[in-house]
Image: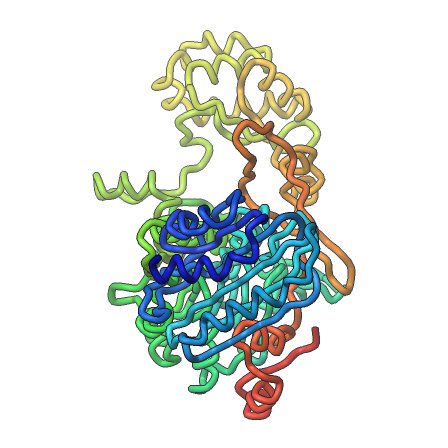
Length: 550
C-alpha cells in the first residue's frame, strides 16, 4: 500500500458506511480512486486545488478538503488542529476521526485538510446536520468553496469579485484603514439619507472586510498570508504599487503556486502606460474612441453614467479568472490573468476600431439625419415617450415601418425606393417619419412593430426597469440584508440550471450587506490564519490591522 493509500485508509477506516465528498485536487479523480475502495458511494467530486505541498515526501496537489458524509449539514462543534511539522499529520488525522465517533448514523462528518507553502497543516472536523450544505457555504452554488482575496477599490475589480461571490465563492476584501475610496461617494448625488450606500453595496455585498495598512511591511505580510490560503487573488494595483507593497504575482505565487491572480488596471500590465492611473471615463470611454464617436446632449463629449465602463471591465476580469480556473483544474498550476479598462472598451467598440484599423479613418458622431437605416432609429411619440426601433434588415424593416404608420405611399415613393435612395434623401425621410410617429402613442407603435415581427422597445427610465416584469422574471434583483433596511441590487447577468431542467426564475437567498471597514478583521484572521486574539491585539495596537463595528 502506498503512502497516499495508507493515509486514506487511516482517514476513512472509521467512515466505511458513509458517502464521501472529495474536494480537491489536481485531478479530483486521483483522490476519488483512493477513496472509492474504502468508502462507498462517492457522493461527488468538486475541484478546489489550493497549492502543492509535501506531506512526508508525498506531493499533494492537494486534496484540500475531504468530507465523509451520510446526510445533513454543518452545525456546531468544530475541532481544528494546526501543525508546523508535517510528520504530525497522521496524529492529527487520527484525532480528527476519533473526535466524531460519538455521532449518530444520521450525522455527517467533515474532515478538512489545508496545506500551505511553509508546511503548515490545518485539520478540522465538523458534525454536519443539514442536507443543504457541506460546511463550505452555498453547496449548490457553482463556485462553492472557492476562496477569493480582493485588494482593490472603486468599482471594476470589486464588481468582478461580487459576481464570484454571488456564484458561491467566499470573498475577503482587504481595505485600507479608512476604507475603500468608493464608500459614500455616490450618496450625495443620490440624495440617500438612510445610511445605505447602494452603489457601493452592489460591488461589495456578501464580502468580508479586513482593514490593513498595506504601507507597512507587517500589513503586506498579513495580506500575503491571506493570499496563501486563497484560490483567487484579485488586484487593481498598477505594477509600481504592487512592487512598493510587496504584493507582486511573484511574491504571491512563491507562497501559493496554484493561485489564480487576476489583475485589472486602466491601461494594462505592459506598455509605457502600465503605471498610469485610469478610470472608466478616461481609460474606457475617452481612450477607446467611444466618447469621440458618440454625440453628447449638447453636441460635445457625452456624459456617461457612473461605472458603466467599470462593469464591462469587471465582466472581462470575471471571464479571464474563470478561464484560468478551468485551466488549473487540469494542470494544477496557478497563473496570472490581466485585463484593463482600455482592453474591455476596445472589445466593446470593436466594430468601429476594426474599420479604423482597415482604412485609417476615424469614426465620427453620426446624427440621425445621416443614418443608414431609418427603421433602426429612435423617435418621440404622441405621448412624449421615445421608442427605439431596431429592424436591422433594411428592406423588411422599411416595409414594416411604413405598414405600422399606414403610409404605403412612402414605401412606393421613388425617393425612398431602395437603401441607396433612402440614404441620399435621409434628412427629408427622418423628418417625415418623426412627424408621423408624433401622431401615434408609443404603445401603439410597439404593438404594431412587434406584431409584424419587428423589434422595438420603449426608452425606459431606471425606475421603470426595476419594476419591469421581464426583469423580475430573470431574477435580476438580488436581495441584500442591511441594518438600516433591506434593499435590492442587480444580480448576476446570467442564469444557470441543470441539464434537463426547465428554465426558471432564480430565487436567491438574501446576501449580507458589506460591513464597515475592518468589520471582519478579527474573525477572518482568527479563522483563516489561526491567529490568536493576543496576536491580533498586537497588530491592532501597531496600526497594522483596523477593527470596525460588525
